[in-house]
Amino acid sequence: MAAHPLVPPPGAVTVYATSWCPYCSLLRRSLEDEGVPFELVDVEQSPDASAAAAAVEKINGGNRVVPTVVFPDGTTATNPGLDDVLLRIAR
Image 1 (cartoon, one colour):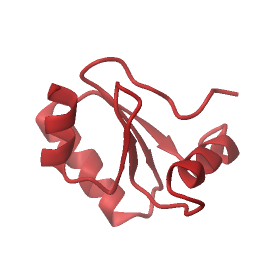
Image 2 (tube, helix red, strand yellow):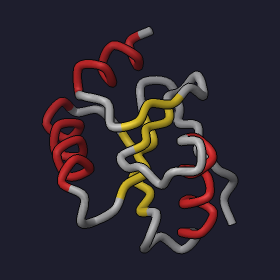
Image 3 (cartoon, helix red, strand yellow):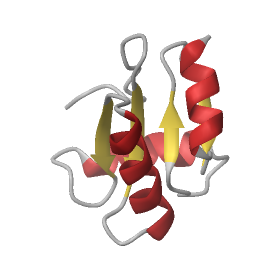
Image 4 (cartoon, helix red, strand yellow):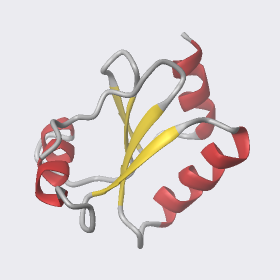
């Protein structure tokens, strides 16, 4: 089982998401369009979904809110816009 949250390498992000969340889909497509490398962790379908869901809940004060994004410096954002993600990975 992987450790969570998954801290990505510089220039990339980890996105905790679900397949049915429209905000997750929008963020995923936006990251793809911008060429931002990311790891998508489905909190319901991944092999270690229970650990992923627990990480999201811990990050969000007990709430399972997606998308939750982890940045290379270990900080997180809940439902960030593309501009916020781009600014934070450029630091």
